[in-house]
Image 1 (cartoon, rainbow, N blue to C red):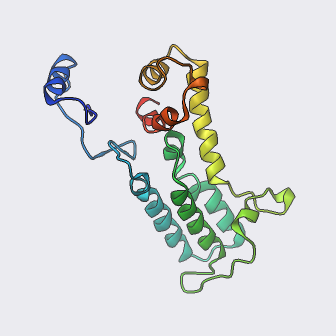
Image 2: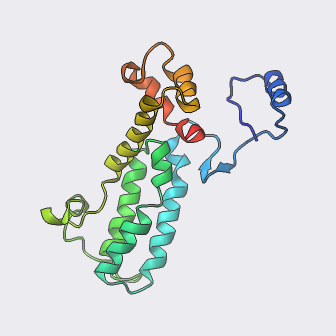
Amino acid sequence: MITFGSRVYGSTQERLKKIINIPNHGGGGKYLGLPEQFGRKKKEMFTFIIDRVRKQTSHWTSRRLSPAGKEVMLKSVAVSMPVYAMSCFKLPRGVISDIESLLMNFWWDRNSNQKGIPWISWNRLKHSKKEGGLGFRDLEKFNDALLAKQAWRLLKYPNSLFAKVMKARYYKDDNLLDAKEQKISLMDGLLYYMG
């Protein structure tokens, strides 16, 4: 299957499909759990992650988990759900705050019928146990780290297909470190297609 950008003419699309012998044209489906196409409204694109985390945490709330069980479930399952999307895209702050809100509510709720009282802020719980927190991941910093890994791949392997395509598309006359910020922000939408 092949997907074209909005600026590629229909005749060019047909010619390319014949040349590379790909009969199917992509659309609004999903590839590796992420949308094949996306627009300007990134928050709407990532609502599926929020919905998955909500569904999973509401399922767990009906069980009676100890605080240690809740911690394990949050750290090993809930926080890992958005990792693939975060390694490809810079998630909007609204999406990250919605996910963290769901995690916080799950942490403090007693069960599905009783809401808990948040005695300590979620930001404090993100600190390491040595610093008085519980070591929950800061999703925004984790997102940045995953995208930095992609940038490292571009620098480390400049002759890879991934690096060549990104250079040709986003920073043709520069190197990655000198490229303009607005071009790099466009790049995060293409990382998962090439990664």
